[in-house]
Image (cartoon, rainbow over all chains, first blue to last red):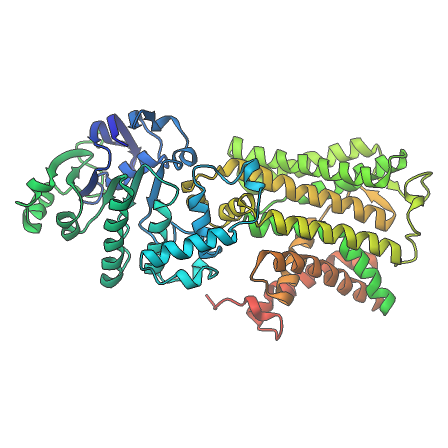
Length: 273
Length: 295
């Protein structure tokens, strides 16, 4: 599904008083199936943008449209029908007290919440479900196929993030949101998860937003690279245009205007009496 | 001694609904629900009023479940719709329920021993233990455990467990947190109301203050059960809650047999719970399964 963000506005109060208007009339649209990588320094609004799309933060104004669906009109759990999310912290994207099979089942049923009458029919995950999950994990080369009854809390961070990624792609999501999903992983786990990410995104064909701090990732993955600074789009490159970029040139763009993420922007601070 | 433990078995089963309800809110939903103190007395009072007015016992028990569930729903709505903190929501409901229960009962205590219908159809309750009473209770509790075990193994139950385990993740997978909490808290308090009714029947009276300390009682039962059975699956956890209720009542019966007086019961309850809670820290053999590293 194509995604259109139009005239988005969002701000937050500052710790010392005052207000920071992060997004003010922000626009971004992308075609169906596009894999967009989002970079920017801390506080540039990357993760906030993902949270606004997912509905965990409330819009100040503007619209977010997925296909012909006004996403911003739905509460976060309703948006989840069409959204797959992988969060930065491996602890956040899975249920540690449930087994691998139970976690996969939750994700698979995302379009029809379990809390309905149909959710009472049948014991889950059923034998058929388990068979399907085992095949899926084997097919993706994830060595968890034999451990469907293991509690997710007993897995390593990398394994949990791998599972989280598989879960995000279950239930036919139309938009995939990846929020620095390899940031907490060691290099080996990062490579595994990124390899799987590319494979799953291509298989799924869903529009994808991936936020990252890794410039290597930014230059390697995706069809389009966008750069944010203080809630504004300051760079937008297609895969072809990106070929001319280097980590150093990107870092140059970052460095020219680094405004502290948590410190108030002097321009926004109330004037001294 | 056998009589004592058999009596504790029956009593424990009467309290099983309280233990299961506490398990549902505290362990499944991860919601510290203080409504329990109010819904327990509400269930007992409702059943007593109905039974003394000639309503058959099973119907009275069902109504007690329904009223308990309504009380739970009120707490759920206060928390999910009005955004009131979970503990406050429960306290508010419980405070209000005290008056409601008293209004329903029209007096603070209703004896159930000399009623014209209903209770007399049941076996004599004064003997301390009775086979038929025990059998009926066993069937009810086994039925409840089976039903809960099945429910918690459906997509519906999975959604509730996910909400308690990781609400962010649950919402990101399409689960309506408000609805889940409302349904879960209502069901739990329904069980607690039912338990209150059974306890009133068992002890032969309902009292408007009978719910005081129920939450801590339920918690103690759940924790003792967990210490004994160390459950890793939901069905075993449910059985553990029931077992905890029986063992807890047994320990209290032992305390009474040792010469402690009924006025000391709350203190005994508190000490027993303290021992169960501190078992991990104190590394008491056999009770220290849940031990956590020192901070």
